[in-house]
Amino acid sequence: MIERHLLKLRARDTVSAEEEQAIRDALGEVRNYAADQTVIRQGEQLEACTLLLDGMMCRYKDLSDGQRQITELHVAGDFVDLHSFTLKHLDHNVLTLTPCRVVMMPHERLERITEQHPHLTRLYWFSTTLDAAIHREWELSLGRRSAIAKLASLFCEMRVRLEVVGLSDEDGYALPLTQADLAECLGLTPIHVNRTLKELRDQGIVQFKSGRVTIQDQARMEQIGEFDPDYLYLEHRRH
Image (cartoon, rainbow, N blue to C red):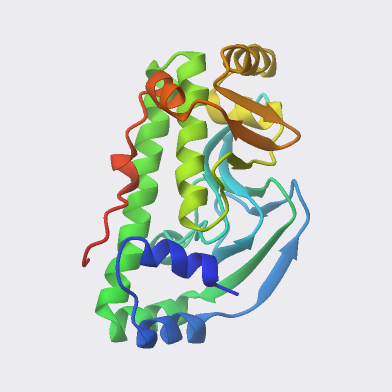
């Protein structure tokens, strides 16, 4: 059930059999959600963290006029709100972009992990700091990158993150988002996203069709997006 989560952890450090069992013992209720459902609302008191098993979710914030900014995408294997363990409520919302299956980890069980498994605790601490690194890269895109660079950078990031959990192949990966979803990730209009996708397609770099990213020129896409995977901290080392 948590194989993709373990792949994400083990891509960066060793997880012992004892630690894996501690994770499994801490898991609680499995829940299923339909697409386009807000599962965590800003300010809601939380008593458990949500681990995404299947599907894609996002964090977002809204303006009073209805405009939405997606601040991070989450894939299978991610905790979508591990930071709720210390914060107890979020300053943003969490939405399903596709049908999703999640498993809950009650805070009291996570607290037991912090008391009994210091190395695993550091790994989960690392996960929250990795989220922060991704946020900083997205902030750079929103504030400074051109439209085509924003899109290329996002496509590069998602390729790496999905590869870590076994959800990409040599040609590309499934990205079941609409152009409106991409617009809310990138701070663009859907029309601008459409034009930018056409530009990437016409240059023979990447195609986005029917919820799939097909990469034709990876090196060129990384060049356009100025993509440096260092912020994803993929080196395997002891934490």
